[in-house]
Amino acid sequence: MSGAKNCPETPRQKMIGMMYLVLTAMLALNVSSDILNGFTLVDNSLHTSIETAEKRNTALYGDFEELNRKNPTKVGEWLTKAKSVQKESDDLFSYIENFKVQVVKIADKDKADPKARKIEGRDNLDAAGIYAINGGHGKILKSKIDDYSKKIFVAYEGNTQKQELYSKIFSTERMAIDKTWESSMFELMPVSAVITMLTKYQNDIRAAEAELVQYYKGMTDASDYRVNQIDAIVIPESKFVFLGDKYKAKIVLAAYDKTLKPDILVGGSRINDGEYSVTANSLGLKKFSGVIKVQGSDGVKPYPFESEYMVSQPSATISNSDLNVVYRGIVNNFSVSVPGIAPENIILAVAGGKSVQRGPGKYEISTMSEGEITISVSAKVDKAVKAMGSGKFRIKKLPKPTAYLVDKEGSQTQGGLMSLDELRSATMIASYGKDELVKANFRIVSFTMIVDGLPTANVSGSKLDQNFLNKLTKGRNLIISNIVAIGPDGYNQNLGSMVFRLA
Image (tube, rainbow, N blue to C red; front, side, top):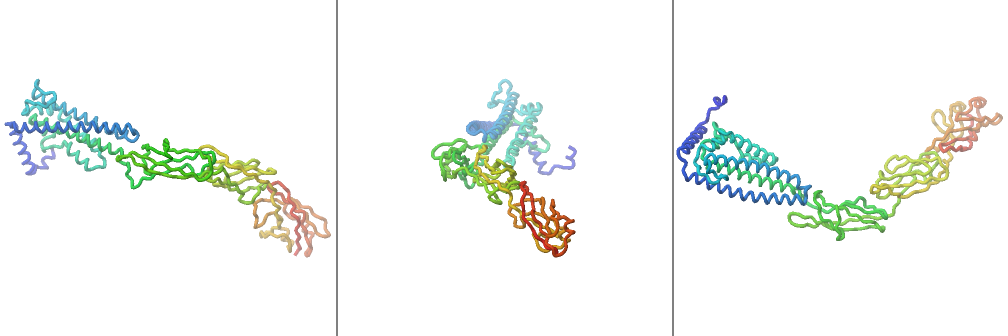
């Protein structure tokens, strides 16, 4: 490499390299039978560990399958991940097993043990290099180990301790500066040593598989009982129930797992899907109690609960916000409520008139009918519409207003001193005045102007007759009588008379 000239070896690296060469030379000259026997002992011990791990893993997968059978919604996702780990582990384990068999075949030829356990050419220094390096299988093995290591790393996302541990266990970094991992593993290495190292990788695979599957199994109940307090809670659709209707409530655990189906008993009777339903056959306060039984890791735990609800007759409260009658031709403001029913679930119908909602429980009702109107109230209850009650209201004509003359300054008067100029600019109106209880707009239809010694003037509209005013002099009395006004109810009202003295 071009960078090698700029990075000379340190004395320590030179010493390691020299020791490696000496070791290789010693192995090439003579590998003692004691060393080879040692490798065989280690290999046999590793096989025992592998067999134990495989039995443990088989039991672990069986437990996992049983959990999934009981609660597939909760366990299914994690079991899928565990099976993926199982397949990836089996694939790498099998590849290494075949790798060992092929190396032994090169060393022992026709006498090769198909299980690569009994090896005659244990001291063979060429077989591993021929298969791994010359055949290119060492690079493939390295790639597979790297892939497996990466998958373990990702599986333990957030757990840096586990990531570091398995990165070291499955590391394929260079063991020497001038040698690749596969060269260090297989070049001029006795078959017995190579087989033992590969068996160690197989043992590491089964151990990693077991720990990761156990980790996934633990995740299925990672949130079970991970709270400071667990309470049984009754969540009713409504605590107000009308006679003949059903009371319904959800009974759950606070901080509960929605995939868990506990055993719920109310009054000794089991209920399904956590929904308690009973027909209300009598009025008054009703109480009930029960228990939720939950299967935990330490046995069945009971969680008692109790609740209550009120049964009442269907009723509606209807009130006129202004007066106790409905006036013809104007907007009458009403407030409507039903105990236990939200305002948005109230429906209003007016026979003989119409209504417009102006806010929660607020309505404007108007009519041009005679006699009476009927206001009916319904409510949406459990996705159905139920009648809540009705009321009848008499329809009345609007109260008689008062006639006023309004000058150009806006001042109102019903009589007294006024100048001729003030009378010329004045306009006649009809209203309920400042203390009005009902809002209604009236229009002056006609009136009569009377002055002693002058012909009577009949006037239409709200302005005084200017020609008649021109005939008047100071000190004379002007009588305005027969004042007729019409309101929004369509009725004409006679408002009496007013007397003014010309100032």
